Image (cartoon, rainbow, N blue to C red; front, side, top):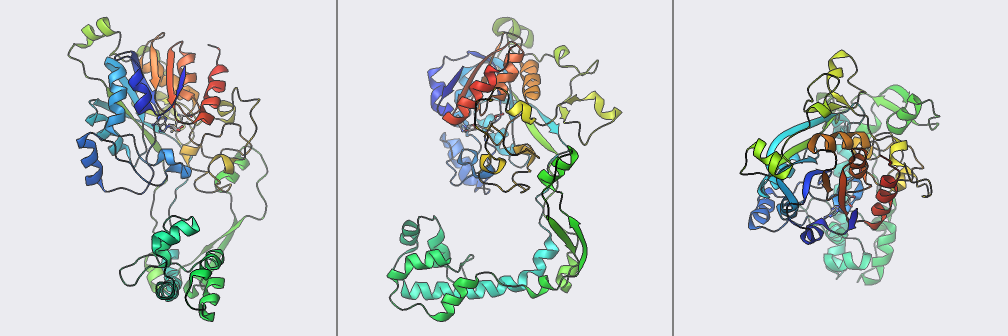
Length: 452
Ligand SMILES: C[S@@+](CC[C@H](N)C(=O)[O-])C[C@H]1O[C@@H](n2cnc3c(N)ncnc32)[C@H](O)[C@@H]1O
């Protein structure tokens, strides 16, 4: 069963202590890092911090991790001693764990699901250093424009935002040196919209800057090309691997640093290749012993034998098999990323949507589309429009580890229903909650395709 709505409110209508386990993949909060004191201030007062903006793939539902007020509702409906497996992002897991702890959960462990796919979103620092000359010129030119706007346009930043329908642009167009940080030269379209408000004619130098907007970097243009190569990153790499055609003419080049400052930073970047997703293992505290708890509530023990890898004891490491082949890794539970067949199972009557559209207008081969969370290497023309589908096999393993066959599993952040599918394969009961009506249709169809 799946319920449409915000789980923080929906769960209030469900009876206390009615679920045997929690298996969920909530929003990771891949937004700008908020002021932690403010977040904890809200959390400790008992209300949820409301983040503005959007998270992964521009999705507003992903803007921040669920707060303790939400987890408290989840806590209430779980039986004493019940376990929970909660996915988190590697850079926001500390917030997820803190939020769960503030809601009353004990943190028991942290599982790592390791994967080989996924691309680093690392910036080539030396290249950026070589672009600094143009940045300075661009900034100075932008300040010429913002100074002029402040003098000859009577609209406030807020009024400009409202008028253009673009949040935050007013601040960029009226930015003031030296305190301001992000002055912008208006786009041609925005300038035309603002023109009727100006109290003076727009000078020619301003018109010219609006037409140029990009500034050539001398240092960057002078970088020596040391190698030209066919770009096979991301989706193309995946297509090559599976014998499909890669898009033509996608050429990249490797260049040598030009300025002395860039030479000093050659080989430096800003991020590592993502290689794992944490899964926080929590438990609702109980006053009973393990033995008393399983007998009284039917919860509070992990299914060790049912989750063994052959003869081996289940570990807190799982892997996708790609980067971790060989004997050493055979001891760990293996689960690959969700395949297209898994994502689209049961969706034969749904229309196909391009990968870019399904993931918020991302370009093919873009870093966002190739994020492991988006299912790196997803092909276009998928029917499942959810951007963060988890593999059914992984959810089945987690549901089976945390609760017995026939038990009731809760997923308050159901998405396209992968936990539901996993629970069904274990002959477990399932209740899910999901904000989006579109995802609910997908989840119902995908779960309906599972015949245990
Ligand atoms: C990370 S996705 C889950 C994806 C899922 N594991 C799958 O395989 O499709 C999180 C989901 O939670 C939903 N969501 C976010 N906040 C919610 C809330 N307060 N109540 C219910 N659903 C919510 C989002 O719409 C999104 O579909």
